[in-house]
Each structure stands twice: as structure tokens, then as C-alpha cells.
Image (cartoon, rainbow over all chains, first blue to last red; front, top):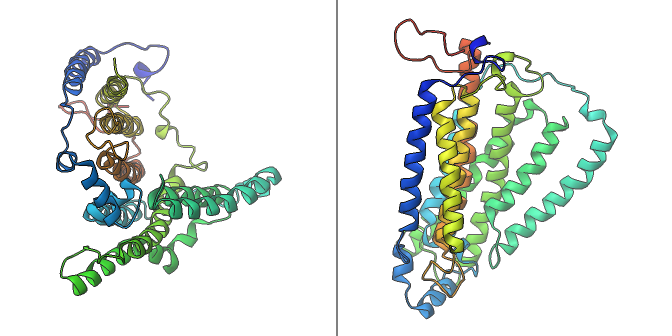
Amino acid sequence: MNSARSWKTLRIRPATVVIGCLTVGLTVLLGWIVCEIPERPLPLAAALEDIADEQRLIEKSGVGNPVTAVLLNFRAYDTLLELGVLVLAVLAVQAASAGIVGRPAGSGWRHNRLLAATVGIVVPVSIVVAGDLLWMGADHPGGAFQAGAVLSGAGIMLILTDRLGRSSFTGWQYRLAAVVGVAVFIIVGLGVMAVDGRFLQYPAGLAKTLILAIETAAVASVAAIFVILFDAVAGPMGRGNQDASLDVRGDRP
Amino acid sequence: MTLFTLYAIGGVGLFAMGLFSFVAVAHLLRKILALNVMGAGVFMVLIAIAHPERAATQATGVDPVPHALVLTGIVVAVSATALALALTCRYHAETGRATLPEDGPGNEGSGR
């Protein structure tokens, strides 16, 4: 660690002052711009000026929650590509962290009885909450990504208590779970294309079923991908790594 | 001051703090944290824009499009953060350093 940058001889570099002044100037400019945003700037909002029109559109989408309707129906392309981005992130992270020594096995947390009891309660509850979020997401706040995030939280808890090991993430089950979301999305999109002629244009009456199928697959993918990402990063950076050069505490602006 | 301006100014403040850290701090982990703070500021501004007093879509209370954007953005931000952390780990494993080298001759290795 460079002593000039440590606690005792902390001094402010001229560059930091310049950066600070520029940031303040930019902040004032941004604040002014944000306050000047016109009242009705959004194209979809402008297209939906008639409230009755909008309600009819939401009903036609097959789900009552407008955010889910936008995510899985009106702008389904966005969500499809987002799931693709997640798969790409998994590939890139696994490639980047391949060969880096992970944390040592058997950290002792497995034998902490209080933690074991907590995990025993929290993990099943998380699974139920994830299912509820998925189902409720059709008509109320919630949905596939929230459910997947909750489920991945349960998985990360299992990793932290050594119940899910590092080696288990190379199995085909995890690879399948990681791609099932984008795969089902594409299959449904192509399937309705064969029926109706347009990619991701759900036929009337089937919209809710198809959206639910896609969301269920997306939950599995999001949960699996977040768990794999966490594991790939937490291994090298976790408790086992005592390397001081990764420590951020000595670093000040 | 409306609720919108309060949230929007808060978002801009978060963005500015993140930006300052991102530029001024050398350690890569701190840079990644700063990027996430910047992202949180952007999400806050977008959520504020969706507020019913701003949006034209009175029927559903909020404008769903910015909400969907933020939801997508959060998930992508998480995976981008994971990728950044993995690249930092790799960089650290290869070079033993956690900061990028500074520009200019004779400066090699001075960034910590």
C-alpha cells in the first residue's frame, strides 16, 4: 500500500478538486434539465391519451398488472433480449473467473446451529414467496424478475452456509436452468409466429397462459443465473481471500 | 416543490456522488460501487417520471413503461456488476493489482 495515500498522510490532490468542481457544475445542469422535463414526454403515454383506450389495451394484453403487460407483451422484445443478456453475463463471468482459486471448503458455518435453523425456515418461505410473487404478478405488483430475485436469495443463503457447493454449478441442471427462460421465450415467440404470422404476437385468449409459461421459465433462469453469478464472483473474493491488495479501505479520493 | 422534483433531485444527487467517486477514486472495486450508485440515481429519476402527477396515464395510477425499464435495468445492472467484479478478480489474479495503471511515462505502478 502506498503510504502517500493512506490514512495518516491524507492529502487532497489538485485533480480531485477539479473533478469535484466539474461534478458540481454537471449536477446543477442535470438538476435543471430534470426539472424542465415536460409533463407528458413519453410516446406510449401520448398514444394512450384516451383512458378507456388504455384500459382496453391492458385487458387485451391478458394480464391486469400494467408493468407485466409492458414487460411480457407490449415490449416483450426487451425482456427477451434481457434474458439473453443474462445468459451472456453467465458465460462471460464463468470464462473470466475460470481457474481462479475459490474459497476453501468447510468454513465452519455449516455447523452453526442457529444459522442452520434460520436457513431451514427462510429458504422454504422464500420459495413460497417466489411462487406467490410469480402468480400475483399477473394482476398486482410482482412478477418473474422479483420472484427470481427472491429465489436466488434463498440459493445464495445456501451457498453462504456451504449447502450448495462451488462444484455443483457446472452440472447440466444449472446450465439448463440458466437458458430455459430465453429458450421458452423464443419457442413461444416462434410458435405464435407459426399460428399468427408475427413474432411474439400472442393470439387472443391464449395471452395469459403463454405469459405465465414464459414467466415461470424466466423465474428459473433468473434465480439460477444470479446464483451462478454470485458463486463465480464470491469464490475468489470471499472469506478465503486475505489478499490485502483487494482491500478498498486504504483508497481515498 | 412537488414529490417529483424531490425524487428527481435526489436521483441527480445520487448520480453526481457516484460520478465523482467513479472518476476520483482509483480502486476498481470502489469504481464498481460508484457505477451502481450512479445507476440507482438514474432509476430514481425514471421512477419519479412515472409518478401519476406527471404521467398521462391516470387510469392505472402510474406510467408502466418507466417501471418496466427500471425493472429491466436493475436486472441488467446486477449482471453487469457481476461481470465487472469477475473481470476485476481476473485482473487482480493476473497482475496482483486492484487499480488500473495511470497514463504517462514513469508512472507505472504508482497507482498503488
